[in-house]
Length: 107
Image 1 (cartoon, rainbow, N blue to C red):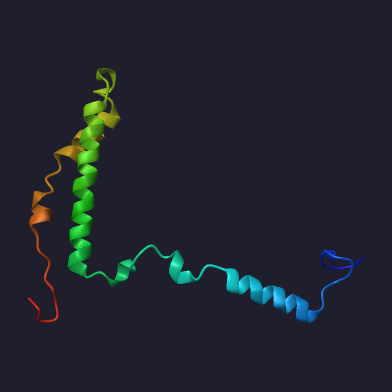
Image 2 (cartoon, rainbow, N blue to C red):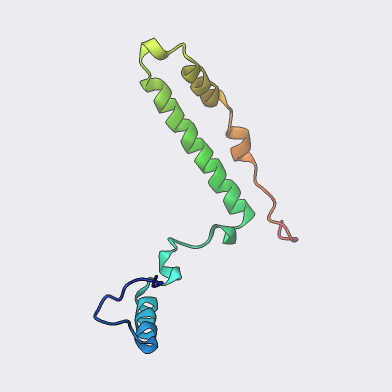
């Protein structure tokens, strides 16, 4: 039983032809740097990551408040409504007021 794929043409490619096809595919591929949407997250400072996390929490809390307001009256006493209300009632202002230290003597 023969191994491998059947040749696309009348005969199998030579080693040089296979190598030329491989190199053409490699050069046509999108470079990894173009796939990345922006700077890596690990290059942000801890303070910047903290502010981004707080902003995300506040935005999510606002989304949950809008979701809670849109609930029909028949769902006001469900577990979902109670969980939404607990999230809305969280006081995130204390977290937002915290300014983390810059570190390494740059305080």
